[in-house]
Image (tube, rainbow, N blue to C red; front, side, top):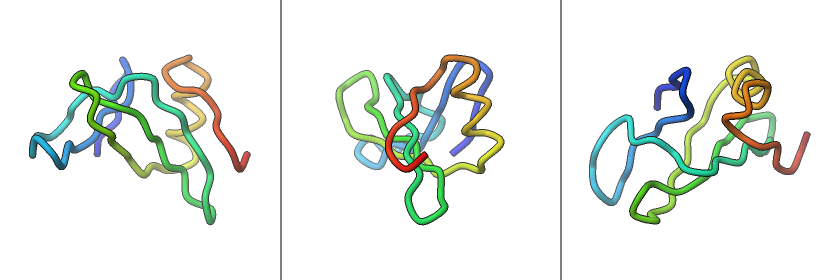
Length: 70
């Protein structure tokens, strides 16, 4: 679950591959955790947990949108 400058990447459980780019990620805050949810290129659901600074950086750069809990 790494974050790149171009956007958010995550592990795809369905395809068992790492660093898959997330399409249209939305970052929610649940129980104090920042969780990015989105889909991969094939439409499979993905999620990535990150810190506050990383989440705010992705939102500021326009790579992700704010969800609920902010």
